[in-house]
Image: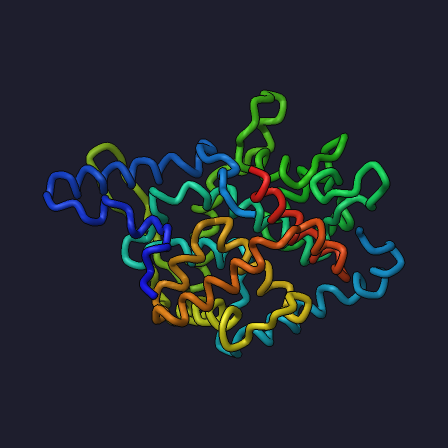
Length: 326
């Protein structure tokens, strides 16, 4: 089977432009928009055509061991040479162009996708959870995000978001938080929730970890900082881990997957970087991986949340529900 069904930015006509002039215009436009995109919160919670909570006491023991278990999951998904990256760093790394050092102009989903990563990462670290389910608030997106622990995470972006969630009364739901953190709100009293320069701050963190480098490029209208890939092996391991999660290590029951692998697959799709991670596969393996990812993405988050055993799993499905609704 061919790959005519792919809807990647890589297949846009701009890659097939024949003249130097058109190529340069596309390049300059891409760089200008990239320069502005993550500063002003230009993207929205992207429109897509994708498709009962357990009692609190059921989670008591799971919550106490959540971070320890999460670490075990991570070790099972990676090899000993891999760095410990946050979900935000992994999604950005998947979206960055290796040589150019910036994300594609045509990807209008990565900003909101990164904010979704922040919510899931906070839940995985035991800092936030959804309010308890009730007869009036049964659906995931009807329930507000609450702070479970305000202890610092040691990550600047996570702590910034956690502070916003902690200081907000009344609480907001997950979909609202993604929009607020991205800067997509018509309420001027809530503009201060916007997290600025997220991609640049994540890129600098990856520079400190030796994965990316920093270069200054002088263009006609502005100077731009880019972050080309330095350690290709780290990105290769990340791509391989994601592919393995959908192929060699695939399980038909998501409850048997590690929480981070489940989150990585769903968030990579939300940020529109899953396609590029699977592009190196042969046609047959690509179709298999795509079919399996769709089985997760097309699941009903509210139904799947009835199977969760931890608040973090519930948050993962809640974030997917937020992107599905947009």
